Length: 321
Image (cartoon, rainbow, N blue to C red):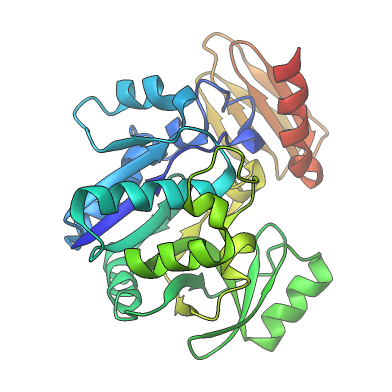
């Protein structure tokens, strides 16, 4: 039995002020009239591979997700939010309780953009052929991205995980040609996943509420000998920051991305990302380049693209006030 689990507990603070505690990134409608979470569910259903699709999230988002997905019942609620290791341990154990140990699990983020359904389906089918491994889907890099983790590989073997590199290192990875972007999409049998969690993270396996907060990449994947990677080449973007939208949306004659409910005027300005979610307010940018401007009912963000990784910190400060 093939089960897909969508991890939907993240806060998406790099998209503040569009994303907030009540409306995290996976509940934003960035590319269509559906949320990123709804698009993820639809994409998995279109493959025809999965017998069931489940969502796992935290208590704080349960109400909002149920409001968004009124006819969707397969929702698992984590007792605590402890990063992806606890999330995966909890959700896989729940699936085993329902369907037994002989299930095959596929784990997906809830907020990525993926195009080309056919290539996506073929990539999943290839990943599912590895019966005794934990398989990562690795994206073939198209440019020297510094916001992604990388996987050094040979054939389907993982040689090493690399954290987010600087620009020079990312260019080197691209030139060498034996590195992949870590997509965060995982495939394995319930038995293999739980066995490796029990081996390396026994407190998480026991679902102990005092288990440390640690990602599955660091807690399990960097230690296990069972990890494999499937290189894939479909159009993928983790939509991890406002700057990532440069790779997604069409640009105007000023090489800018404008998503606005009202008028926008740019004079002697270029390469900006302007998002205006408020009716009746014009946005004007004069003589400025490479900016992120986001206007919502409650907040206004103005930030250089080069500093967009700092937005997460700002969101935390605002939430504390």
